[in-house]
Length: 167
Image (cartoon, rainbow, N blue to C red; front, side):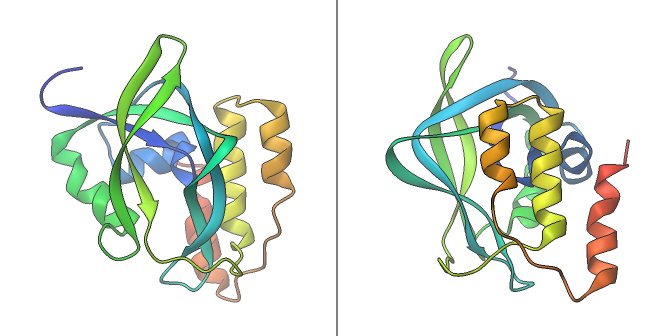
């Protein structure tokens, strides 16, 4: 890693390579990671009223995700896409990789509602990212079991699902 880059831990829809590249064009996948003693939650309140992914401390649980090396020049765009200061805060985390532990940057929700659910298109992006990255099948099944709801704004849903086919 060079001094003009940072390592980002993606655990939600940014696990999907094409979506990540739309948000940070310099993003380069460097491997998988696990975040012990955290649980994946879908309770971050998005500006569209649906639930987005979050990580919450929980002893004995684990969150799996992808590590990307990203140029610092792309960070403002990623911060904007992630809603830094308007729903997420930046955090430094210690994750486990096949090369040992590593300190990384990620985002954690500040605006949560435990009763919100994700739109089905968002859940699809998270699931496809997990499959693309070949995360543990048991973890993928847990993602599949998450309740979701249809977005009444079909244009927004279609626009977001374009990331599935971007290159």
